[in-house]
Length: 281
Image 1: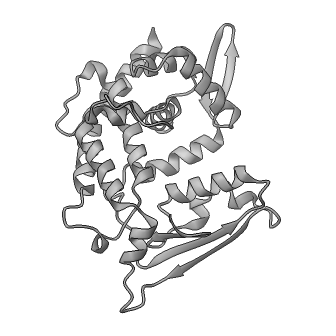
Image 2: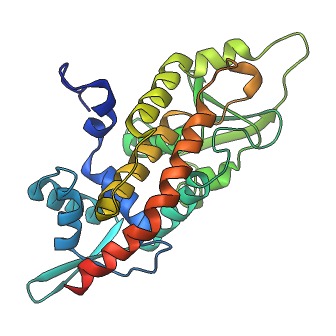
Image 3: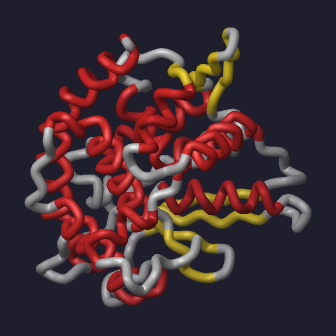
């Protein structure tokens, strides 16, 4: 994904980064997984993303790609196409909600460290990409070639759900183990190696600059909650759970968490009401 143009204001860069797939997943996780909303007409999804300045062609292309990846089920009734979640997308979105609404989503769970090493044949670059993406979402950083590390006691089987369930020994070799810091040998250097802390600080600051102090109008709740959750998911992907002892005293995670929960509490109810009105038209 290319960088935003140089004339894009800093406060708008989070918005400039949003992709149609990110917005659709945020919308579906917020309003379809737990909101009780069934398959939705493509026209409704196009309208919601249109409010966020995503063109109809881009939204339709994203829906087609997500259906091809098994994340959406399209159903045509006459001239209307609706899209519903698949078991795979429901699983992914339910697991994501656990961290999205965690009261401390940037704090490790449990002591010590979890390490993972994997290898796949060169011909299976798709599998390599999927494992890397799921490890990154679970908070792992690349310590050195082939060795990934995450703070705390990460459930590796859950983190790699959908991969480990179907793995073949000829395609994926995976090792996972726990580790504890040896007294006198600080893990601080490993943290700096595996994660770019200054870049993560900037991502927090961008999120806060975009949303802190912002009050939403009820009339735009559906648009705003979709954008808010998309930006929050983007931040959670970029910033894993890291031990406080390896971070600066003014680390901005707590402020980001407070901002998200404050705005979500304001927007969630009106957004569901707005969606219901759109479906009645």
